[in-house]
Length: 165
Length: 392
Image (cartoon, rainbow over all chains, first blue to last red; front, side):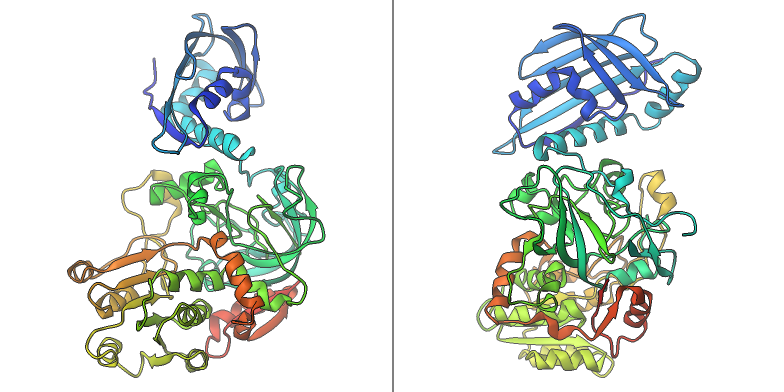
């Protein structure tokens, strides 16, 4: 039951090698991928992913890097026994002129049935490219400015209390 | 803290709200000393801007004293205790648009979930704005005692001693907006510029057009007090309730038409429309059309090969615009939100040199607690009210 996926891209004003190096250290992915709580790098190729699921729970799996062309392309996949099969690839290209680099990414989730499966199905089936699109924009913000724009944090205090004061 | 919050159509109230805190390392917290109501705030007041939530703090024209700085703010550019004016568009200074002076198109200041809304409507998202709905970023506005200012070493401009708040407050939006509108006219020696709308932006466009070398400025409105202000600035004036604007403009310019036309009116508060967009956007957006009377007139009035400069806010989809006329005459159209950061220093310098004192348009001064009254006045009494400023 693979889901339809969409390739998403973003242009980042940094050299392709720098963006590659940032992505290749998978422990960095949690900093811009909203659904990832944490990734622990086990060795050169393997990493352990902890991903947010409903009701404050997490889903965990191990992933393996299957392709690695430095500065150009990274591909990864979960093992066959993972609860949620996930695979993806990202390509790093030079952007025209002095615009930095173009990042093209595709991420697939292939969940089983059941509660967690339904959660992923709902999240990714309806708008498959939306999450990747947002995550790539967050990556761009992080690399270009050092921070990710946020108006939902509690301290952002953008409105009055809902109730009477 | 106390802040002016939106609660529905014609319902704004000063509420007690949580104090803003540092969220990101380049934020600053400002203690607001002066703030103003913008003509575009009236669209929020009229309830025609989508993606506003009850309790949202409004206000994008503000200045004050820096009271707190995030860890990564460059202290060689801004420091605690500085008196600053803050541009209403939030820009990172690092992305390609910012580096090419297109600060209103900043890639990095509309948070991704909110930017999706603007992308659904426009194709791509521009910069986040203070206090102007969630589609524009959901940032708390500055009609409040305190406000969080992201990228504090990029936007805010320090004000030297010797200038009072009223002289500089309008660097936050309307003076640069009027100036960009005039600059976009590409004024050549001998040019006549026609300006529709004598509200504050139109007033600054008039003064800016002269500063940029216009020979004549013809200002169009129907409120005598505003036309009077325009005359005081050196403009010739037309009251559209008394004369046929296009015919008059033609004769006043020896049959040529004005060299450039500025639409400082924008959408006439009748809401935005969408066409073939994402389901989510469709649910939350109201279904009416922007009304383009001024734009129609300006297109028809403009000389052949002239320029149409549009600072007036438009949101959705226009109906019945004489695009054939624009094509047939080979018009150039320049428009958009103000690229604020490009203008702050040059315009501050003009104020320091005494070439302009923007405070002349202030008609009313209130305390922040009276802000709801200020909105009502600005909305209902435009014959006598030109600009309302407030102090917390």
